[in-house]
Image (cartoon, rainbow, N blue to C red; front, side):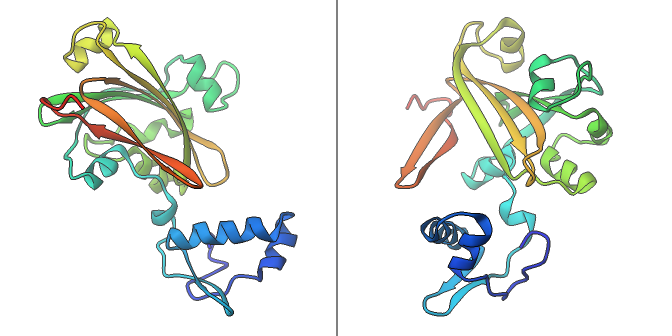
Length: 234
């Protein structure tokens, strides 16, 4: 579907054929087809087969940016670019991006605001060959889309680790909060369709600005960041 081999309207192979091709069971294939159907990528006609729907390539599979996620909640986010560096030493970022020893990633630091209130301080690291993307980037531009436009690689999946922290002095000034304010540190590795790392992000979030909602389902869970607002303590 991604490379155009299966176009809209095309019929997928039979379940047993797919199970044999991928070395798995018919039960697993049925579960995968059900997931694709729920995402709107295929339609299943019982007794007939599964067919590719009209979908828009990476737009359906790609991750939403921070601003796009906020827009889904009817929140308006502004972005202010603070720093652009073609190379910045960060052992954690180099390891996450699988860079050769001694190679430093490019770095972009941005402040996310809702109204005039800073809510997230975000540092994004990317491979050195992508550094030219940063220079023409404007405050409201999506880094995901800039990378996709230049390389054709879309942000498809991400693993994010979130831990409670006390906001450090250098971060507190930019976030306009007290030093030691309880907050969150989110570290995310974003990958393309081939599983290659695209970005390593580190975000600092004061606890009184943003919170987290977990929606659990029978076959998984979704973690969503929500704006708490000035007066909302829950």
